[in-house]
Length: 333
Image (tube, rainbow, N blue to C red; front, side):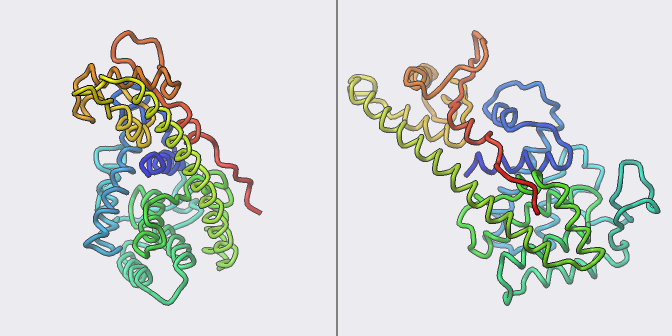
């Protein structure tokens, strides 16, 4: 689940102009120094933290305005949008348009502050409605949230977070594996045009078809990637088992070490690893982690990244390539 969550964080943030890549985010998490702006990396990391927080919070708090504010606070904490009052609904008028445009030049103007809580109250009530098909309901709710635009910044990212959390709350998703940001980004012009078509002409049916098409395509994409990663891990576990069985004395009492297998589980969460990170995460000696990494390198599971003599970085490139592969999404018609 975790690498998919990070992939969503990168793509959702990229829609808002953040330039951090998935590789940079994964490397930074593995303890590698990257050249990308700390602000960009923090914005993406905040998205991951906000979604993880929301998943835990759903256990004792339903989707609500309170949870929406909490998500926004986690999302905007310590980043450039912090000036946009993290965790607070706006108290001033905002608008959508080209950079530097005025209110009169805006392409869309959300409800004024005096009407905001009335609109949000109706939106919250709609979230709790149980008579609609859930996928159609969240499609409608996503449009409504973006139209209300309740925050000074971060509305798009919070709105995309809520799609995943809604589907988890309704038990449509057992884990947060389905994300629509890749679809929205690949069909970005259509996404904005269809949102505008609802606002201007009430074209709900076109928006629903577009949204459900995105769910179908991203479901297939997520399943395909997950199956390929699981297949790799199974093959690697067999290879590691064979290697361990042929090397007695690798662990205490002459037993084969279990560390390489544990290392494979780490790579499933993040294909980038350092010896220091593996040692700390697995709770083993540095030399034990080093032997395990060298063993996986010999099996062609890991490859060194760069030419550093110290603090070497390794990558399970086969997993990373699956995560990085562009989604095959044609323009919506």
